[in-house]
Every structure is written in structure tokens, then in C-alpha cells.
Image 1: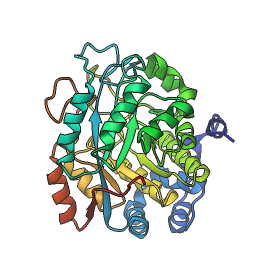
Image 2: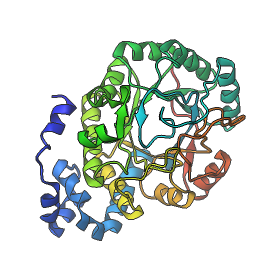
Image 3: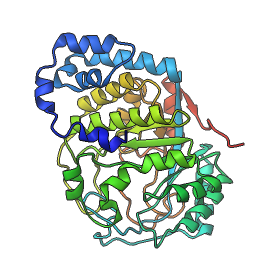
Length: 366
């Protein structure tokens, strides 16, 4: 069964009615379980579960330490192009925005990579806008080869591609794929993705599977909180991660919890995810998916990220720049404004002061 078929099962599901009928006993039972089913996961997402947030956080922390120890994996993003052929209402790179466009030459990519490598972090994620014309497969393969000289783990966050194209990127040195569905509600998806290739909901939904079947070692997915109904989106992204981790046992699965931040275009979120609900969702993810990485980016402020570290976060970006050429000479507007503006060494020192071990490198291709 495809994940699209699983989503169809919930087309007429009454989430509000379900949440209204969740009892304290159901929540406590779900927290104490060793293995949660999808209804346990829903119980932990119910508004009433906030009354047990401390208990939920303690269980999430215990599970995290059992599976990951006191470690936090580090990575850095590099933006190599902001050209885009899609019109997405919430994104700073959207083709509708009148911003300065830039694509790094291969020489500039190498210079940026050398600067990033000074941090000591050996995991890198390279990103582009969604333009096959400006950043074709051949260019992406060359970027991957350059980055592989400096970094042991290279991931991509680019436009969705075919399995054959992903195989070529894998051969060029790409280890992982990050692809956010952005919003699982198909109606909302069509409203915020006005035109361009990204408006193809179904093709994007199937992208992680094509990446896994092409050989990528790691997949990272998520929903962009601020577009659809918060609890529904959390539920569907958790189900998606569960589906992928069960289907592709050889893949390391990661979940991100990005919230919409200010960007060019001044999009106003359709829904607001507050900090308490953020923590509730993160903990529910951990109890439902004990072995899945939980990634917290610099979209979140420094104090909040530090607090999440002590609960169940396992992966951080550090010293991130979201503009093209940002590590050497920023020349363009960022995709979105970051909130944690600390340099990578400051983040690393803080991780160590909290009793955790920063992991600079956890993978080497042989």
C-alpha cells in the first residue's frame, strides 16, 4: 500500500470528535506503552495531553537517551542557488518575489565549502530553489563531488527528482535526501503552491520513496507548521515517517518540525504553533517513533533550542546561513530569517555545557 492510500483512509476522519473523546486514562495508557499504534499517537496529540506534558517529556527523554545516548548530531546547510520556477506563497525564493537571484559557480561552491569546513562539522546539506533549468542534474552532481571532498556526509534539499536521477546523485556522492511535503492537506497544498512543478502534490508525496529506492542512506521529512491544521499535520507527518521507516529498514529516518518564519513575500501563517504544543508534538513523535532522528533547525531561537536538547532533539544545524554565498560574502536575500544566530562554535560549546556530546561526523562512505 502506498502512503497516498493511507492518507485517503483519513479523508473523512473526524479529528475534532476523536480528540474530544480522548480521556485521561487513554493518554496515560499511551504514555506507558512500549510500542504505540496510530491511535496512541493521536491520544498524545490531543489537547488534553498537555496536562501530562511533564510526564510525556520525561518518557521522551528516557527513550531518546536509550536510543541515541547523550549526543547531538550536527550539520550545516549551504545554499547554492535561489532561482525558482515555482510560485509558493510562503517562500522567500518564490519566483513571484523580486529578489536578487544568484547561482554559485563551482569555484564559488568550493570556496564556501572550505569556509564551512573550518567549523569541523562533517555533515552538510546543500539546497537550491526549484529550477531544473538553472540547476540541472549535471550541476547538482558536480556540486556533490566538490562537497564530498570536504564532508563525509552530503545531503540534498532540491526539487523532487526521478529515481534514476537520484541514482546518479547517489553515485556522485550524495548520502541523504531532505524533502518536506510542506502540508499534507491537499486542498491547502494547492492554495499555497500556486504554480510551477512544486504544485504537483502527488509527485512530491512519493519523492522520499524514490530516494530510498535509489540508495540514499538517510531520509528527512516534515511538515511546515503554519500552513495546515497543526494536529492533523503532525499526525500525517508522523504516519509518513512510520511508513517509510517500516518500508525502508536500511534508511535512517529523520523528522523536522519547521515553523514558518518571516521571508520575502510577507506570508502570514494560516495557523500558529505555540511553544507548548511544539514540545507536545515533538514528544509524541519520540514515543511513537523511538528510533527516528528529531531535527531542530535555526528557525527556532537559541534558548528554545537549548531546552529542546534536554528533552528529545537529536540533530541541530549550527551557525546556519540561508542566503546564497552566505558563509563568505552574502549577496542575496535569505530563504527565511533564522532565529538562532549563534556561530557554530557557540552552539557546540553550549551543547557541551549541557552535558551532551556534539557529533561532527557519524558516517563515512567506503
